Length: 504
Ligand SMILES: [Zn+2]
Image 1 (cartoon, rainbow, N blue to C red):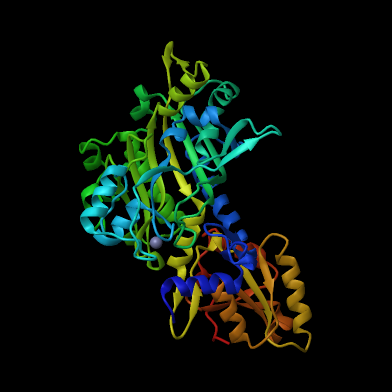
Image 2: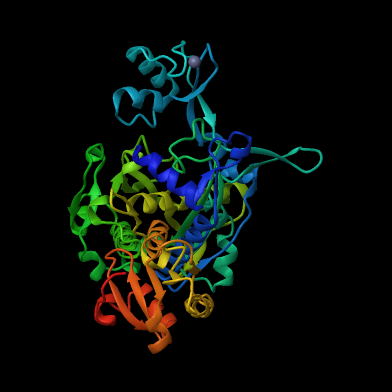
């Protein structure tokens, strides 16, 4: 076995999840393609995300907006002037480096948010040289991470690939507010691609130049926010948090919501931390100890955020807790900025008061989340290689096999397979021993396998095997699709289906 990272990437490539894009031409740093299983997993993740987050409010909706935005809109949002990383170029080999990463590699402490002058001073103080050629490093300077475009034949209309989906929601807020009969809170979700010209893309899908975001922008009236998101049962859940001073430790503490509010966090914000945590622990089945929120201090926060906690998942392949999303209180920064930039009034009238709505952004990197789930789920031991994906997310729901390739078993198994594939992601396999077929299904995370044998021809039952426990029960093939759907949605317990049978 190699490193955890190499083992994962080997699985992804071998089985059709994902791999570096354009590898035919030697690769394209910061870009990944998804194969048939990866694309299916992504679609299911999006479905689970949408059903959960749109379900949080009765005025929350999915929209879809352009990925190219004109310069004026990104000037108003602040991205043209402030969406920068610190670039340091080697004077000898001309390699580009991110200033904060050069420093972090030496100090093992976060260096995000330093100014160019501070980066220069640190590089001098620590004697840092080019990691590639040991050459002398040039002066640090801000580098804008947006991809510029020239739109139209004259190329005079400057535009950019969007650096986040969020702007689409802000640009369309007023239209949706009118179309949806002028109510707050209003939630606008976008699932779509965003682009950042990262100085040094790395760590698999963790830092990419083209990536998929799932974001929900919640527009609300700041005066009534705590009443709109009132205390309820959710507020009793302890929340896993590493405060700014604790986040270099490899752990987190459970804190009562009331404690977080007492520390100065807005109640509506804490309410949403609890909801996001519930999504990870319940829907994605992330083990509690491998999930946490990490607070960003003022230097590290993006220029538009007032309160900012990262959502982090502990991943062996990436060396510990890594960001998969964030909960961002952006205040009225965005609507006020677009109102000033466009000279249009983006305030609304609520109960006779003029209000510029504030925004709470729940932001998720879909590629990062998929990588985290695959990392968490992949068990590689001398005896088994199993991908423990949550059942509703598994790209293959059920493998269907004939025990033997003769005596009418393949025909019967194929007929069951054809019935199942109408509503389920079923896969038919009759190649190799039954043990090898189970092993192949384990490795792609299929939660169930149904095997047809001689008894099936007599009494219509099949052997149903569960991935995690490898337990097997005998069930009727006639109601198999409904049984599987109940199992996947958690309405039925596998052990309750019938008596366990000896494993074949
Ligand atoms: Zn160099």
